Structures are given as C-alpha cells and as structure tokens.
Length: 94
View 1 (cartoon, helix red, strand yellow):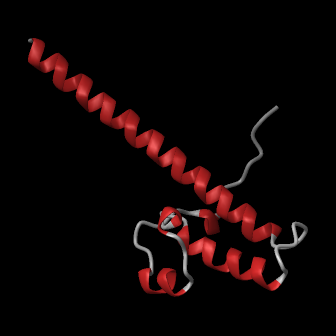
View 2 (tube, rainbow, N blue to C red):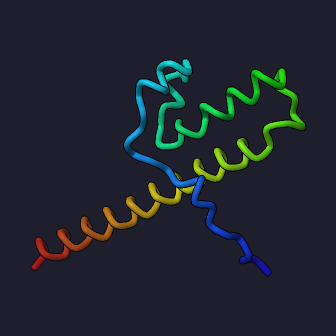
C-alpha cells in the first residue's frame, strides 16, 4: 500500500553546479540541469563498463531519482505560482 520510499540525500537537485567540471566531462547542454552533478559519475561508470546494462545501477538510480525530485520541485513551484496569481486576480476583482 504505497509509502516506504525513503528520501535519498544523494539525489538532491543542486541549483549551483560546478560548471567547470560539467564542461570538462563533456555533458551536453540539454543535460546541464540541476542533476548534472550526478551525470558525471554515471557517464564515467558507463564508459568504464562499456555501457553494460547490468552495471552502474546505483548511479543511474540516484540520477533518475534526482530528475524526479527536480520534477516535483518544478510542480510545487508552479502550484505556488498559480496560488499567487489567483490571489492577485481575486484582489483585482474587489
């Protein structure tokens, strides 16, 4: 019955990224988001294991969890933005 999911502190999205390390790791611009710091060790593991799908599972899981957490943050930010806009609209009506 749902639940039981624990929050992984490694999978926390970071706004302030080490851009020099990201550039050095040749991370494409499309992936330079709040979870790019986790993509560096994941890609390193992938290269070392020749993209073996049975390896690097922990790195992939942490990266995907970070992506999910970033998505949840964006959803919460949008909800808060909608609340502020609705409050402003109701103030203008009065």
